[in-house]
Structures are given as structure tokens and as C-alpha cells.
Length: 296
Image: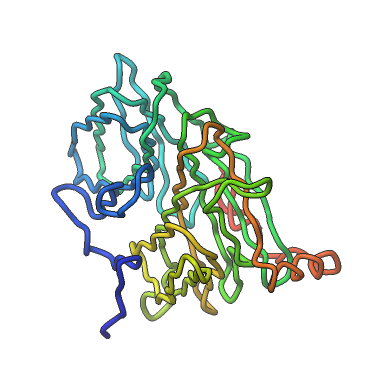
């Protein structure tokens, strides 16, 4: 099946380079701060990483690894896949050389942000990652807040994982964060997707992004595992999980603000939906998992 593409929808494999299955840089995205690479290592494989002007995370999508940086060694247990458990991770500061090695092989997301301060390399235990349940009813979703402003220190980078049970909507109501106001901060955003397979093959989800009259953008993408959607500006949402297939996405955000904050504005046409959640229960399938494995 031929799928639609655009400058903002990058199908799986379309940005592969060297050991990286996905490569999004500020230059390739046409913006200034946010980036993402997905590193694939065979059993016993290793890669040297130069962070340069970027701070970066090593976040297992599947498999575990060892990260060596600035004389420190972090053993990352990882996970079987993004639908199995919350994972531990490592933080790499700017201006360092690091080695990522995997005994059994795996795929590792490297969310990144151009930054100013050089912080210390650190290990993020899975048990310290707050698991948040948002929304209600068919807008229920799980958010793993492993690198948000309130949970983990970074200079500019903001990153989290969202799990949307099959047939639910997330990133809803549609919202934006593309200017500096009392209710918004300007953040470039990357969505990286994985879709849980069904009994007879892979699944798909959908992502919507649309603009304002003065800053147009129009994306309605069928997304499959390892697809990326770029959000330079505009309203984004919903992210739609099809029935029978849980939807995962990794969000990567960074911007020019002096304060590391995540402030959003709902689309006024759809913000009312939040009030309906007061009389609804959270989807009983959530949480799909915690740091200890499967949830309900």
C-alpha cells in the first residue's frame, strides 16, 4: 500500500543513515532545537556518539545497553518493547563523547535538544518515572513523564512517552505551543510512533496537525511503527489508535525560551471536551504497564 508523505510525515526508514534507523536533526526538520535519532545495534554492537551542542537521552525501545560517558558507566536494563514496561535511561550532556554498547542488540531512541548549559551525565531509574493517566473514557491515555520539567533536570530537552489503548484518542483536545503568551511557550515537537501488532499483522494509527490562518500546516497521516510526524507549529491532535492496536508515541520538544516549560493552549473549538471527563471513568485497561511490567 502506498502511503501519503509530506515534509512533516516521515515514513519508517525514509531518514535512515548508518546505524540510525531514524535521523531527525534541527537542520533536516527546518527548525533550531529538537532532534531524534533511533540507533539500532546488533548483538555485541557498539557506537560512539559525539553530542556536540546537544543534550541527549539514551532511551531503549527494545533491548538493553551499557552507556559510557565522562568516565561513568550506566547499565541500562531496557525492555522487550515499548508495550512491555517503563524503561530506565541515561542522560548525556552536550560536548561529550559516549559509547553505547548492547550485548544482545536492540533499538535505542536518542531524543536531543540544542542547549547552552553542560549538565552532568546521569542515570534515570525506571522506578523513578512518574506514570500519569490523563483524560477519561475514550480520551484516556497513559503518559510516562521520564524527562519533563517537573521530573528530570535538563537544559532545554522535554520528552515523554504516551500510550493510547486501541480505539482511544490522545493529544486531544487539539492544542498548540508555538508562541510566547501567558498560556503557551514556543516548542518544536517530534512524534515518533510504534503500533502494537494484531494477531494477523501490523497495525496503524492516525495523526492530525493543522494550522492557523497566518501559519498554515495540514497533516493527516496514517502512521505505522517507526514513522515520525514533525510539528513546527499549529494545532496538533488527535492521535488516533485504531481498534485492536495500542498506539505508542515518543514526544521530543525544545524551544528558544529561557524557561524550560511545557505550556499549551487548547483549540477553542474543542477545549470543551475536557469538561465531559468529570463524569467519565478512566479506561480500565490503564495503566498498560508500570516499571514492574504489565499494569491491569
